[in-house]
Image 1 (spheres, rainbow, N blue to C red):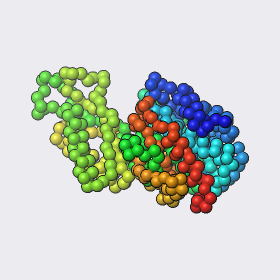
Image 2 (tube, helix red, strand yellow):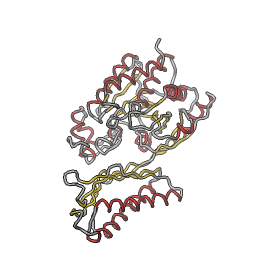
Image 3 (cartoon, one colour):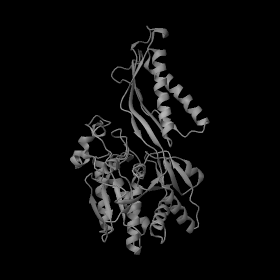
Image 4 (cartoon, rainbow, N blue to C red):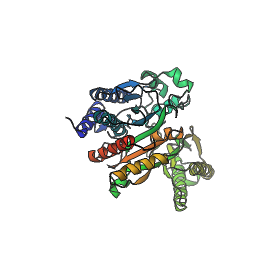
Length: 419
C-alpha cells in the first residue's frame, strides 16, 4: 500500500513535470501551465477514487464518490497558478493537502459533520494580469468588467481573452451572480507554505494564521519629466524623472519608518521601476519613469492613510521638481481576519495531539481572504518553508506538510467539534 508521503510526492512531481520552465515552474493564470496542472490533479484524483468536475469558471472540484449531499460543505482549497518560473509548492500544497484529506476520510471510513470537498482554484496570482484572486472572485460574484479588461503582463491580450480561451462561462461571470455563499459553503480551509522566514527561524513546523494583510496597488504610475542632454542642462533647469521618483520613495520610506514606530502594521513595495527602454541612454536625462506601488496592512485605515500620504508626496515632488505623476486604476484588496471559532478548533486538535499551535499573521495574500470577506468562516494553516516563495528554491519538508494535513483531518473528523 502506498504511503501518504508517496502519494503526495508523486502528485507534486507530476504537476512540476507538466509545468516545468527552466529552473522553476510556470503555471500562467488561465494559461497552458495552469491547465496542464489541473489535468494532472484530475488524473491523480481519479486514481485515488475521487470524483472531479469543473465549475463554470474552470476551477476543479474534487469529492468522495458517495458524496451527493446538498448540505453546505467544508471546502478545502488553494490555487494552482504560479508566478513566472516560480516554486512548485506555492498554492499547490493546499490542493494536494485537500486531496489527501479526502483520501484519508475514504480509506479510514471517517465521519464528518459536513461534506468535505476540495477545490483547485484558478488565477490567484496577480503577476499575470495585475489582479489577484481571479478564480475566487469569480466564484463569489466579484470579478468585474473592469478587472477582465486588465492587460497581460507581456502585452498578449487582456484577461477576458484568457478566460474565454480557458472555457469560462463569460455570460454567467459578467452577471456577477455568486456561485458560492454561506448557504452552500459552511467553512473554507486553506493550507499554504509560509512565504517569509519567520517559521523557519522560530523552528515552527506548522502554524495557524490569524489574519491576512490587504493591499492598495497601482500597477503603473508614470512620472513625466523632461528629457535632455546629460551634459548640457544644469541641475536647476532639469526635470529629471528618476531623481523625482527617488525623492518620492525616500519620502515614503521615512513615512513608513515613522508609522512602524507608532506601532502600525504595514509594508510598502515598489517592485517595478524603469525608464523607457526605447529612449533611455547613459547621456540622456530621463524624461519618464514607470513604477508600481503597493502598500499592505491588516488595517484598512492604515492602507488608506498611507495611500493618501503617497498622493500628497507626489504633489509635493511635482511642485519641487517640475514633473507630473499619472496613475492607473487604484486596486484595493481588503484585509481579512480568520474565523475565531475555527482557530479554536485548530488549537484544540493540536492540543489533543500534545502540541502547541503557534499563531502567525500572513503578510501575503491568499484566496482565504476572499472567502472570509464574503462571510464564509475561513481558516489557514501555514507550513514551514525555507528560501521564501515565488522562486524555484521553495523547500517545504514533507514531514511538515503531512503534519499540517493530519491537523486538518483531526479538526474535520473529531466528534463534538462544534462544526
